Length: 341
Image (cartoon, rainbow, N blue to C red; front, side, top):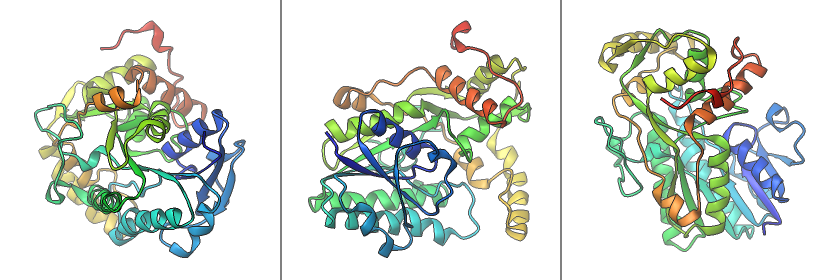
């Protein structure tokens, strides 16, 4: 039984789901936040402390008195004007937090990596934890920063640090407040703003299942090992077809190759560098779409007892929340009246 857990990223999406899962089982939860205004934490009985991954001096007091650290926070963007800030948070900040927490007596750490650090396949083969990527395989600063962070944390494990790693696929569900890049696909599609789609694929998992996977990793995971927390592998066209069914829209029928979109993405990013506003079509996102992000959660199922629900339920829950919050105009239908495509 965990007495008190420190959770990072709880003001965001996945970290918030982890904090809620811990609260539901009776664990006292402290959350590390960069500022005091956190709508996703309203109504939750958490202890909020102010700190910043890029400011190591603010981290030790957050971990003091906690048994477990769930380090979920990450700078997850497909375009950044200043890449150094992303590496400072995802790599240096993660390492500083781990060292501070362990020095303060934290007994176990669950670190949220990503399937982005693994190899993906253009042909759609389903990969597992053994398909380790190399730094040269990583597309964009987000993937590279998560890869370097995982390397650094695995080095800590080799020195005896009690850390378990988990690699979520593409979580979707309620409280995707930003929203994430995957959540933005759902919002744009539900609002009829995706007349075409790229020939790519994602693994969709319900955010609450992924959060429960974090708790299972704490309970049953082996130190130094990585567990993929995935759901259902779907082509993007099938994801959009589910959204169309749930919202009563017509699914897009025009399939595009990522190569056709690259020139437009280059122009978008040139404008973004001048304006400072994120591009509508990030080049790294287009380059990532050249591979299908299909993964297996067999190891997590066998060793942790992880059992994700069907993707249509995850998508439906996300759409309900997006509609309630005003992100999308049409209320989604109950997925129970449909069968998965």
